[in-house]
Image (cartoon, rainbow, N blue to C red):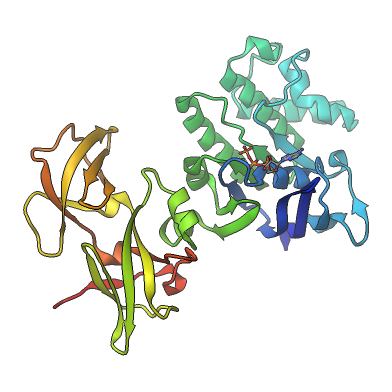
Length: 375
Ligand SMILES: Nc1ncnc2c1ncn2[C@@H]1O[C@H](COP(=O)(O)OP(=O)(O)OP(=O)(O)O)[C@@H](O)[C@H]1O
């Protein structure tokens, strides 16, 4: 049974339509990330689930219980929805010690003292804050404050957790550590988690399901693998991936013998059937799939090395082609390239093909099993 279900959820802010008819189902125990650019409606969706924002229309069901319906006029207040939260600011009470911050909700729920004590101990142990329970939040580092917020979630044992950019205030090292901790926490609690971020690395590393949004609409809901390797449209292909995907203009020619992609330096047959009658397309190739050759190669495109940027385990190489600039990602540490003139190509099986106008991925199931034209 689904744990979180949004049906036809619509939200207007005055005249402005922030969410047009959102439909989303999340299964019990899933870690789901809402991902998209600023203003796409991620936080609005989360706040609607939390009950902090009232939808204009639609139905919201959590754990089998209707929380909002414009038909039956139900609207359960936030505190009665049984949800756990972590927000960007951690929302700790500055005037309360760690121990109070973690147990406040349990006290308010009038839980027996022994049970509160047991849950506090277990939570402190888990987030490694034992010995710091008598400090105020101002006496803790950013990472420790974050742990208090996580400890509070652990103690509350909610079945649905909502997290809104919880790591955005942390430095890069701590963010990577906390990413793993939140993922572990959600798994250990068996909780269903809805996580909001505009950081694709967080989404790819943490999620069972990524929901990519743009202008209030879901562009694709899929596993990290599907979103990265089989994006439903150009928006998703371009939004996911750093450095960004390379795009080549080409023509799709469909004949009785099959489909062929032809463009400047791009020429191959598709072995998969396509739902398309032919015309302008965009061929998208991830930077790690571009190969750089130091000698001329049949079918490869001439390019010039522009900038070489080692990142540690990988190197980002910017190249100039006669008509455009492309980026390659090389799995080595390189500070420079021995020559300026190179040739680049890619395996057509790694190419993704989109209709140039609608942006829709035109290869069935997103599977671009293709072969180089042998002529
Ligand atoms: N209270 C409000 N009144 C009017 N418009 C609002 C209100 N809250 C949000 N909006 C608008 O609704 C749209 C969606 O906002 P939302 O905060 O959900 O986006 P977001 O994807 O979470 O963005 P960010 O990543 O910047 O937080 C935006 O265009 C925003 O300006």
